[in-house]
Image 1 (cartoon, rainbow, N blue to C red):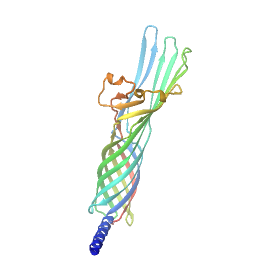
Image 2 (tube, helix red, strand yellow; image 1 turned 90 degrees about the horizontal axis):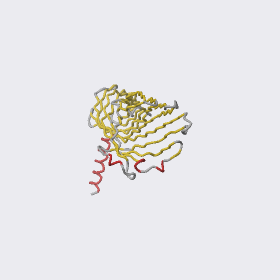
Image 3 (tube, one colour; image 1 turned 90 degrees about the vertical axis):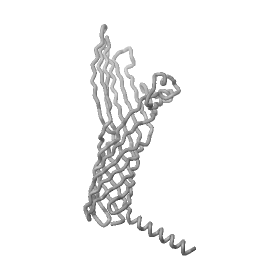
Image 4 (cartoon, helix red, strand yellow; image 1 turned 45 degrees about the vertical axis):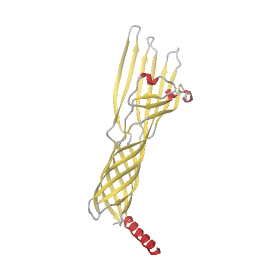
Length: 290
């Protein structure tokens, strides 16, 4: 019995040693540029009221952007299935850059008084998760090209802040009126596709320096959102909001009758945000098998 146990232990140690010799570790830093961008429409208006008529002119702008733009960090490990084919599991974090938009409304009434409103909308996402993938490395002693393809498992959430300020020179109205809010979209898991093409160069025994171009295709569709802060004319009214005013559920369809209860979240159609990107990465790879 003791001999059998000893043989099992020795076999396990040998197998672990063989596996360890095929392992490698890697870490990288890079910068992602957004592509496959989602669209946002912005409108600005100029309205003039006369005694017998109203004239209105507007400007319309369509902005496309991806929320994955920013510095990215990756770290993970892999194992070679044979001399050229490997499997990787990498964790990543992308520090998504803020996206800012502006709009304004200008109104002149019949007495010549002005009502001017300008708003700044800021949207910022955060993205982190895992990238399981397959890698194929071409042969080479010091310089080796490689390619990688796999999936992206992204945990994504969004914050939206609005600062809208309104002013008037009409003495019959309060000179300032404004809205300041923060809308927090709920985090959810989004699944996408990841691919890379790169080159690695041996700088010392078992240590490789690599550079690559990487692409990620990921979309985020929130299921709900909550106003965590809501200020009207410099007065915080967050605690006074009803459930209907404070919470939003994104659904595929709804009717006017679905949005009449103050005790139920507001129903809206879903919003699509692109977290797709093309990035340039540099990093180090340490192998246990060369």
